[in-house]
Length: 111
Length: 114
Image (cartoon, rainbow over all chains, first blue to last red; front, side, top):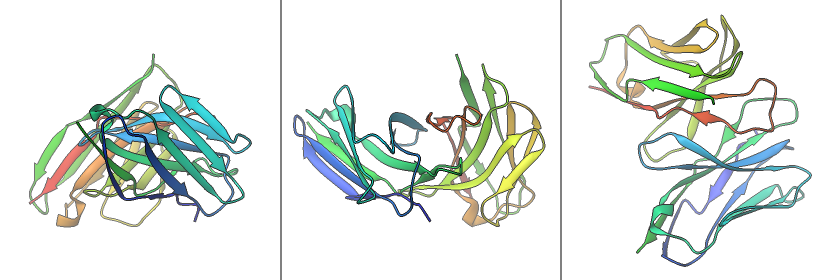
């Protein structure tokens, strides 16, 4: 299985602090993606990083990928209360087109 | 632009009753379509996916079925609901054979079987 596994399962921080979430997977991938889900809503695609990339930025988001360790991290800088949500990583392999999602990290940003 | 519609938003059904959830996509053709289920506080479990009209692949054996009667319509059904079918159901699509794009998800259906 190439399932992504996020850690921590839950993270609580103060507004303005940085939040780091990690994702590990088991097999080779074509790309890895991070999604955000507000409570009771659908998932929203945040950022995609390809297997030949090591780091990618989008606004306050920074994603790293270490294919040798089969892991990725999502950093949210200067967090805001509105960043409170669950964050999921998803992987897609080189030969399959079905994304495999991890169980997610629940982030709470306290004002 | 492409949009995805999913309804209803919430549903409460008795055990043994039938189910029909519908998902439609606008602004694209020949999308890959997916049904996921999410238990409370958990990750997503892929239930079905479809790469074309009438083409359905099932990931896990279950009490549910899926159909794709039209290119941009994906339906999740059950003849008799079980308590364990409760959950949050999400429809998603992405561009055909373009695995370097992310999924676009619908807003989800909260199903409670009582």
